[in-house]
Image (tube, rainbow, N blue to C red; front, side, top):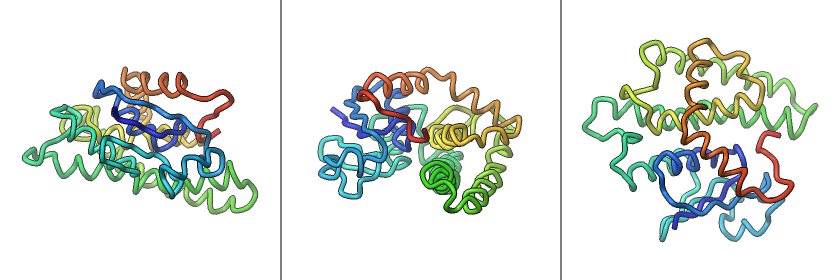
Length: 214
């Protein structure tokens, strides 16, 4: 069975959401954040101490967007994937990795300096919040022609970018969403797979655990 190591609402939410969208069986291990300090036994699983970690037989992965791509490709066919001969394939891959590399990265610095180390580098946090919002314009532009980012349907790319919006909402940056992005975020939240992933992390959470951005 697929095993996913997870902290509530952290990057590992991407593969958890994908697992629910695909209807796959999995074992979820929810840990307090950050696990390298608060669940030190996890270091034996992933010496980097980062999340997520996914174990599927002999396969071991730690990059959230790559795990989503692996799941929808390995356990397809699925409408969450876009095949290489589809004209939207390049856009799909770009959005899949845009969600992490371009949108989530700056928010990790906002999180660090506003939540975990307040008062240390507030200017850095403010600058990276602006960085994130500026790059969110690409999402707004894509949504001018449809409800989803590419291929005319909900795909794994929306999971990747959707997580970045989840984190933005936790950081209070959603107040700056454009109307198109706000409507997109609302569509994502009502998906059964999103709601099932949210419920799963609560159901499997150890007593006293908290969300990533709390």
